[in-house]
Length: 454
Ligand code: BES
Ligand code: ZN
Ligand code: ZN
Image 1: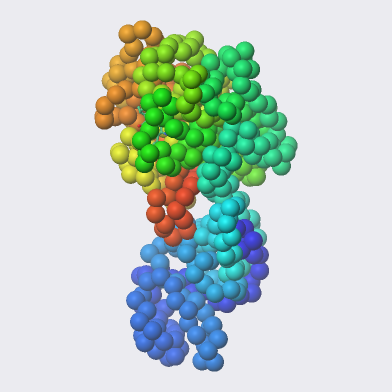
Image 2 (image 1 turned 135 degrees about the vertical axis):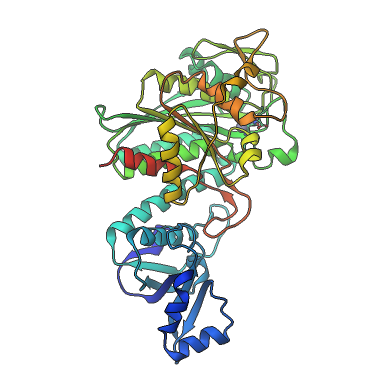
């Protein structure tokens, strides 16, 4: 993907114009350009190729609502013929970054299992810093998409672990895995309980990077490699996409990549509880009471509410170090999709100021996120008759909130953000093919970059 971005100033001219300036721009064009745009039926929006009088390509025109939208040019790299293109309009650095990012992510193909035609249209910018920044942002997005798109047969806990280990090698980070029965020995009973029915051992992947004296930022990602629902088995159509249930883990790997590649001055810790929610004679059951790392006992109301179970042990471990900020990403609830739809991730936080700053950061970088409330009145719904809590609340109401309140019980006073994400594009949009998607990752990164500048 980043091969389609070049540092150079040579290329076919690309006129990138906002709608409100199009009429002015058209006025200033030579007669043959005006005539071509008129007769070719160009509607004044989107891209079109402008031929030279000899039939070669003179330039490309692209009219957009806003050049600051990171996805507005997301279709150009796939739609244009082979060649190198360079913007000739007067664009701010923000708009150049948006253009380069859209160009790069638009070139994404998931071709691990079948050949896909490679993208041959390149973007040349005369600004190396922007090219490099766009390359890092596209690379982070590509890593998230690849991890999610890879089917569960090739993305079990050990495969997530390999991905983290190779990233750790890249950046000189340290990783330690706690695997299978070691989880019981080292007091991670919930991660073990959720994953024990699988052929593939559950594990907690624990990576650290950076100067120990820097502020601590801890990422926790839900790594359910496949969510069958367990004994409360999902119906087939709800199970169909559940290879994406490690999407939270993928987001935290992508975010860790961005933090390390940009050398943010933080001490980073990445915790991924990875497990398959499978069915077998030794699967955990509805009604079982299972202890947590924190010591609270949890009665299993529904084995399909497994994400919060693996997360609660990892979050409690994360909180024990008292980080400056702890961030989790999880494909946690269908309820959050009911509330906000599939393209807008919800987030919860116990930090008031952070909520507004994060939504602003998301808007700036075209990665919208929406704050939902930790509405404490609903906490009583997690009451159990036989244990300290239940893991889920039956019924159709407020499920994203009760899931977040469950997690909060394990985070205690730690400053914390919890993202409930879809991690999947259900339909193709500019620069966003059907399949795994990073949602909220760049928003969170932009927030962290502003808070911990280097
Ligand atoms: N992985 C699912 C949630 C999910 C489903 C996220 C579809 C995105 C799209 C999670 O483990 C789950 O099954 N949650 C249940 C919770 C319920 C049993 C309380 C849900 O949302 O139905
Ligand atoms: Zn589930
Ligand atoms: Zn799940």
